[in-house]
Length: 445
Image (tube, rainbow, N blue to C red; front, side):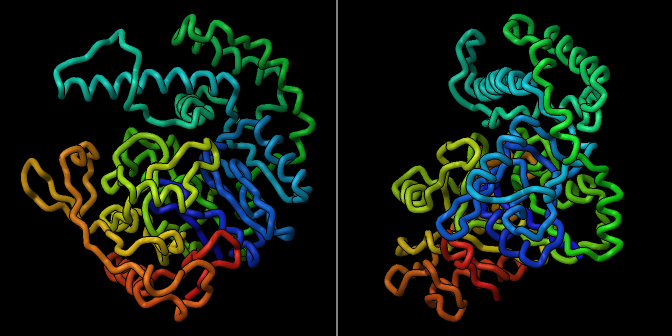
C-alpha cells in the first residue's frame, strides 16, 4: 500500500511532521523529486532535525529510505546532511539508498544557478517595464527575481532534459564521468564566458573522491520498488516543495524545476498508480511563500507581520523570511483538482490563536472586467489585476487556545467551524490537524 504526502500550497506546509508520524507504520519512505532545495523539520522531544535531500523517514529506526530516480543530488551535501543527523544522535547506517538513475548536481550547476537567476530577474523586469514603458538594460536588477535557492537544482534538471546530465550510476566509471563533466563545462564556458572564469573543471574532477564511500548507498530503484509493491510493503512517499511550485501546474515561471505533484511521484519512483491508497494534501491554516511570484492573499500589514512572527516563518533551507497571508481556497481547490487528495492535513492551526477574526479567500475579482473568478487562472499574470474576495470568520481568541490540543472535540467551537468551512468549500475531509510543533500535537479524525 502506498501513501503519498504532498504539499498543497507553495511549500513549507509541514509535510515532514506528518511523514514522521505515518512512518511509524511504514517500511519504506521515499523522495520522488527535487533536491536539497527542499526543507522539512522534525521535532522529537527537545531535538530538532532538518532534512533537505534525505527523506524524513530516517527518524524511524525501522524504516528504509530512498532518494528516488526523479531527484537530483549534490553528493557532498548528501554526505554533509548524513553527518549532521548522525551528530545529533540519529543512526542512519543501512537505512538510506540512492537511485542510480538520479542525476548529479555538480558545483558547476551551483555556479550557473546564480547566473541564471540574474538573467531571469532581468527578463521579468523587462516584462514589467514593458507595461510601464521604461526599461534600462544596463541597470542592475533590483526586483522580480524568480527566488531560486541557488542549490543548482534548475541547471541540473536542465542538463538532464538536454541529455547532457550525469546519473549517479555513472560516477563509478571515472573516465566516463570526467568526459561528461568536461562536456558540461565546455558548454557552460561558451554560454557564460568570463562569468565562470574562476571555475576550474579539473578541480571539480579532482574533488570526486567519494566513489567508494558512495557505492554502498547506490541501488537500482526499479526492482527495489517493484519488489516492495509486489509484497504490498507499506510505502510512504514524501513530497518535496508543493503543487504551486510544480514545473507544469505551478505559478510559472516562479516555480521549481521538477514535477512536485502526484504525477511526479509515479514517474520519479516507478510506482503503480493503482497501488496508491491515500494522497494526503498538506496545507497550512494560512498561506506562506518563499521567494518571488504571485501571492494573491499576501498581507503587507500588521496581520502579515503577526503571522510571520508567531509562526516563526523562515525557510528551513534558505533561512529567508516567508511571505505570509490568509488561507486561499481558490488556490486550494485548484490544488485538489490537480492532485486528487483523498484527505488533508491542516497544519499550524494554533498560529491563528492570536486573531479576533480570520479571513479566507473564496474568489478573485478581475478589476479589468469586473468578472468574479472562482478558479485559479491558467495564466498567473491575470492575478496582477485581481482583487481577493474574502469571507470573514470568527476567531477563537476569546474562547481558548488551540495550541497543544489533541482531540477534535476539545477545539474551541470557532476553530471547529473554521475547519468544517474549509472542508465544505473544497470537498475533501481534513483528517489531520496540527496544533503545535511537537510530533504529539496532531489531531487525527
